[in-house]
Length: 332
Image (cartoon, rainbow, N blue to C red; front, side):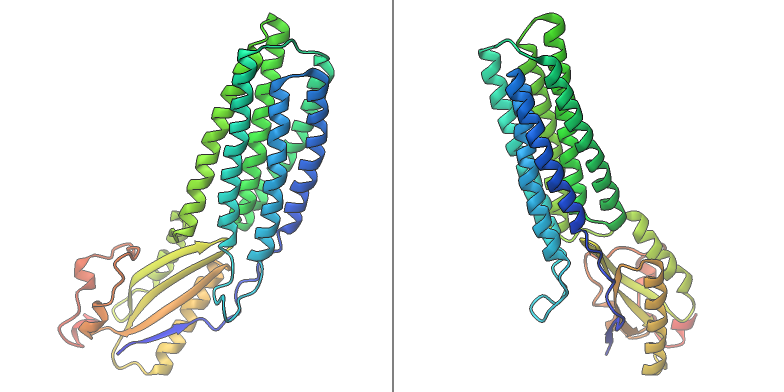
């Protein structure tokens, strides 16, 4: 017979990241105004596509704000693990919106390639576009840095989305500049088309990451190594571990592991050991939520319930998982 225990410590305090979403919304509104004005002045299909992508950025930023507001809500009786996975839905929407922006760019580029038109007021148009790109680039760096620091896929997705806008603007500037230098109007839509293809690649990456999160992917290798190093240090002649599983959901990280202890340990001794183990694990990774499963080391049943999809602990092999033939063997 085995006993299970969850950590009684308070859950990791989530950080309110909505201020970053508001920053993204403000940047989108400003750049839409700037790029639309640049398009009106020049008639460049590249600048029109650039402005269209900024509209998509605004919609995506609003979705990100909603997702972050939902994700930070505390756990309830209905949502016992909270709503952190709302961030993955936001990232999926961001990826889909990137495809919409790419489609607008590609269609506009093909139409303008078939019906080329001369550009006007290029100097002012390019200056406005450069200024808008600098705004997007700065905000994108802020979002990406915050997304990495707080492990927020929503902020990383929004940052990548804005960075694709910067890439779009750079491509447009190249296209318009080449038109001015060569006089060949079709270079503008050609560059716009290439930028659209590049944006599709970014969208595929975001969708892949969001789907992986919804499917409960394991923690990154470096974080898994932190956990297994603690378990390795604690493995000795009397205590061992197996069945390690990890996953992440937005800012939160989860793990569960089976702890095999001597049969003659009292419930209190096993409880104290697990409390100390959980304290060490959460000290190394504050966002980690730990579930432990206490089992007698010499009971064959302790080795029959190992999850099929557990993450191997370094040094764990078939021999280590084989139950000892007697209580004395458990200490040998």
